[in-house]
Every structure is written in C-alpha cells, then in structure tokens.
Length: 345
Ligand SMILES: *[C@@H]1O[C@H](CO)[C@@H](O)[C@H](O)[C@H]1NC(C)=O
Ligand SMILES: *[C@@H]1O[C@H](CO)[C@@H](O)[C@H](O)[C@H]1NC(C)=O
Ligand SMILES: *[C@@H]1O[C@H](CO)[C@@H](O)[C@H](O)[C@H]1NC(C)=O
Ligand SMILES: *[C@@H]1O[C@H](CO)[C@@H](O)[C@H](O)[C@H]1NC(C)=O
Image 1 (cartoon, rainbow, N blue to C red):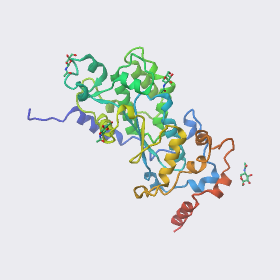
Image 2: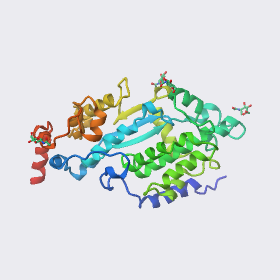
Image 3: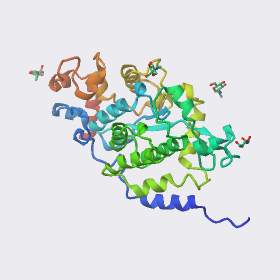
C-alpha cells in the first residue's frame, strides 16, 4: 500500500494538542492548599514569608524525580506520600518539584505476544495494543508482595498504568491533583475491588469522577483503545525506554532518581530518602548549580528524629515550630540577602 493516510493515533494526538491548551498546568495552578485533601499540612508561618518569596522563574529550577515501580505498589514501599510531602512543602515556597511515575511493563516481543496476541490466551489476558505491552501479575506480585484481586488481569493493570500516565501528562505529578487521585484510589481500595474484569476500571473512573479538575474526554482520548488499536502507545513506549535507559528490571524496584542521579540508599525509608533529597541540593556538582536554595523543609526537619511528622506538622520531636526563632538562625540566610539585593535594584 503506497497511499498512507494519517492514522487514528495521529488524529488523537491532534485532538489532544487542541484539548491540552485548555488544561491547567502545575506552574499556573495556585499553591497547594491543605484543605483540599484529607491530609493536613501545617503551613509555614508568616514569619517565614521573607524566605518563601521566590522569583517566578525559580519554578523551573527544580530536579525531576522519577519513581520507578510496579503496580500495585507494595504498601510497605509507598513512596508517593513522601514525594507529596516534599512537593507540598516546595509549593509553599513557590517552588515546583517535578515528579513522574515510571511503571514496569514487559515488551510483548520478549514473551512472544506480538506474533501471537490473539492465539495465545496468556497474551490475550495480559497484553494490550496487539501484544505490544504486557504485564505479568504473578511475577509482579511475587516481587513486590502486594495484593491484587485474582480477577484483575495484566491487561487491566496496563490500563490503570495508562490512566495514571495520561493523568500525569496532563496534570503533572508535581501538582496535587495526581496525589489526590492516588489517595482516593487507595481509599477506595480499587486493587481489591475486582469481582469482574471491568471493576478496576470502574473503580478508577469513580475516583476520577470525584476529582474536580479531571477531564474525561482528555483522559479517554489519551488512553485510546488498547483492544483494537495495535499501534504503539507513546506513553507506554516511553516507560519501556526509561526502564531500558537505566537498565532496570523488576527485581530492582522500587528505584528513585533525582535528576540523573539514582537514589542509592539501602533502605527506602522516609528518613533515608529525605536525607538524600536534601543533600542533592547541597551538592557542588555543576550540573546542579541552578539549585541555589536548599528547601526550607530540609533545614527545619532534617535534625528531627521523626522526619515524617515534621514534614506534615513542622513539629520536631514534640517541639512546636517557632518561626521567629527559625528565621533568626536560618542557615540559608545568605541566599535570602542575595535575593533581596537582586529585587531592590
Ligand atoms: C502461539 O500460541 C500458540 C497457542 O498457545 C502456541 O502453541 C505457539 O507456540 C505460540 N507461538 C509463539 C511464537 O509464541
Ligand atoms: C509479605 O507479606 C506477608 C503477608 O502479608 C508478610 O508476612 C511478609 O513479611 C511480607 N514480606 C515482605 C518482604 O514484605
Ligand atoms: C543490565 O543489567 C544486567 C543485570 O541486571 C547486566 O547483566 C547487564 O550487563 C546490564 N547491562 C548494561 C548495559 O549495563
Ligand atoms: C518563639 O521564639 C521567640 C524568640 O526566641 C520567643 O520570643 C517566642 O516567645 C517564641 N514563641 C513561642 C510561641 O514559643
């Protein structure tokens, strides 16, 4: 066939482009407000306002965090609450922390499903896009010790992965919308809800339905039709490439990257990851020279034995936060005076 018409995917991209012009981005959205979710983050007190006023262009000076994991994420290794806490704290400083999920999936060509997507029942159950992308629930669950209703097939998980990637693409995981989705999804216990094949999808859609900003049309078009569409899906291709570029396999997960640096701590605990995160901003690496400010949360919460509580409440091991005292002793005071000089001229 020499005549090549634009594909359905082409039109979908065109429509997405058009729709996405009306979508709020993390940069233009208002600062995160604790009242919008069940969690409540104690705001930085007004005494710190000097330290919190940032130049608008600082918004772009941020490391990008990638969270490589399988779905469902094992509850003992849920990294999102911590990433959310860091994000919220940065938002309160008018500083965007970009974070994106990368989800494990199997290239269908590795398991013979591209050639055999309809003939083989395993491929039928666990792959999408004509056998291009597969997910093996057994291997994933064995590796991450999570629970998943037995009715949920690999295909259903792939669709959930796609919904999240689409959501992330339009709202950015650095915005609280994505965290809101993840929290509500957990609260609805969607992974356990599968009494039939469609229930994971319907549970997810119900969760989405409760989110004020979610745009169905957009998500629907982004997800596309994995059953009849045997085209490549840009977002799933991206996931395969990300895994390949870090040479990661299932047993390596979870993996966190900050910029291009892979978190190398032995333990995925709040304390260890937080320390790594804070040191990231203090490094002399010239590639990171844009990050001239260590986040306030680091200076406030690093000395505490209970970092997690501090991130949410600013209370350090039972001692309430005193903004007046902190502002006087703030170790980053030189950055602040530098900023004052800049804005005064
Ligand atoms: C395709 O599936 C059939 C039926 O399960 C199987 O016998 C055959 O070996 C498969 N072919 C490939 C290339 O995996
Ligand atoms: C896996 O789950 C079982 C049952 O919930 C638990 O006893 C075990 O400690 C878990 N293992 C790991 C490595 O988390
Ligand atoms: C990728 O990792 C595997 C082990 O997981 C290793 O055998 C292989 O050499 C690595 N490849 C590259 C290019 O680093
Ligand atoms: C906070 O610290 C300042 C200076 O040390 C002190 O005067 C003030 O009473 C403290 N506020 C509270 C609520 O403890």
